[in-house]
Length: 270
Image (cartoon, rainbow, N blue to C red; front, side, top):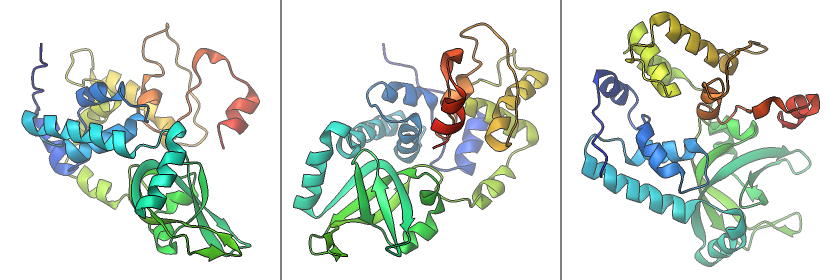
């Protein structure tokens, strides 16, 4: 049987107005994430871009476009050589991948790397690096337009790949002004409920008293506060690690308690 259309409440409508193109229906995410091996936030970005509507027909069309976009643009590791060949043949090509940048001081030049494409020393304009400073901090997932120019030689070596443009999927700079302005449209209780809903909980459920909501907010503190330590006790499957699986690509979750000091403080920091 087809799913019943999701009914948006006043908080959903306010969130859509305050953050246009950034609000994602989690039920749509559940439909999509089993089909593609990409991080959840990549699918969420596309859903926010193409399915930000209350019209079920528009949502269905948007979902199909998201499927087509992921199928054509997401670079699977075993397809990287065919994608590189396609870029060479067609001069420009758009991919969805993780991009990072490093400054090679001996070259006096920034070089980009694309993860799944397994390609380093991609030419990138300084302007893009200044505009998206998180490229220098481990990189971001983005829609990337690549250009191929086999005439470009750098220090005697052919470096034909160029970054033509970037449309970030993750936050690519530290400018929070837009979020600060949008926050003013919410009361404290509305904002608390929006955070709860963003974490995957339903704040309207009778279980969630104000005190319990604040307990759940404590789970977000490690994302914003350095060296914050807490201990949460509970049986398996009661949601202790749920938030950390859902909320951020910058969170490393080690399940089962099987880890080492080197794993936690060296391997996962890189």
